Amino acid sequence: MMKTNAERIRAVSATAATRAAATGLAVMAALAGTAPISPTAAQDPRVDELVATVQDTIIRLREHIHQYPELGNREFNTAALVADHLRALGFDEVHTGIAHTGVVGILRGGLPGPVVAVRADMDALPVTEMTPYAFRSTVRTTYLGQEVGVSHACGHDIHVAVQLGVASVLAGMRDELPGTVKFIFQPAEEGPPPGEDGGARMMVAEGVLQDPAPSAIFGLHSFAEMEVGKVGFTSGPALAAVDHFKIRILGLQSHGAAPHLGIDPIVMASQAVSAFQTIRSRNLPPLEPSVVTVGIIRGGTRFNIIPHVVEMEGTVRTYNPDVRDAVEQRMGEILAGITAAGGGTYELDYDRGTPATINDPALGERMLPTLARVVGEENVVDLDPTMGGEDFAYFANEVPGFFFRLGQVIPGGTSGGHHTPDFQADNSAVPVGIRAMTNLLLDYLKSARAASE
Image (cartoon, rainbow, N blue to C red; front, top):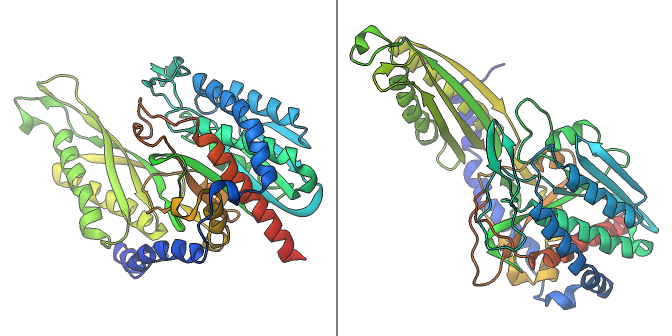
């Protein structure tokens, strides 16, 4: 039965404050009793040895991937580089062409044990790079009919390089690996081109989490607000659900000097933008996170003509499914009321995109001590949930997920924000990421094997 808006609000209001408090407590509890240990001493000596051996090669690969970025569903050369690297390491299986350009590698250890997955995203963004790097991208392409620069302005080159490094390290110690690792290199995390399918959702639909099926999945994301050597983690809800809406407000065209002869969609659109903000401030519980943003308004062709139509486009970010429902319902009610009062009509296309990314609390409690041992407890940062989105959620909805942030800025250095021209991730983040992820996978396999014996 369809819930009313009031029922949706009552359904979520009781849990908002509890969730906010629980996130920080979970991280502190997991780290309790973990003594600060230097990163070097924390490592399996064999892991340290192999990381030191491969890191220069992996950093060169990172620079190459950075210099030659590719947009979503077009990661042809990046995917070929990844597949060639995995084959050269002697992986048991290497599969290509998954969800267009995705690559999956299977590494079976010499000892029996469970299956675990690790994921890195490969796609770049239509952003012209403006960094001092000697290996900065000068690639240009056509995107949505416009000529644009292409760059790794969200750190996916770091993600791919780290995962290639983990593959190299674990392949070098496969005889002592207690289980199987499935390496997933994903295209189109930023979203496929209009009219195409892609990304994590398509990989899951094509069976990437089957044959063999992992019992958990790990992933990371570089973080422009964190120094190299630090990692961040959010227990439970970590990144928001991402929805995309398109609106057409229809009126009646007239001369700008005779507005009484027309129906003005610009006025109705302006009222709608303001009214949408009351959803957050007046219709939802104050402690329940949500965002309603109108990012595009298009209308009119000449200064003295009231147009027939105004188009709007934007995003909604939420965590709670009931809040997601309530926002969509209220947007429709607001548009219906405003256009009825103004004499016009509306069309609302509301596309539910990536769900919220939830770090499995039990897996987080189990694996956070590993991060503390690798980088030092003082370098594990308890991060608040963010309203940014991440399609790692599609994997973590199927099996328990652990998704953490990797510091990327050298001490004293700077970086622009994610998706900006001056976004900078330092090479020194790569070996930190390799050590952290390798140890997470090893510790998971060892503990899961021990629990099954």
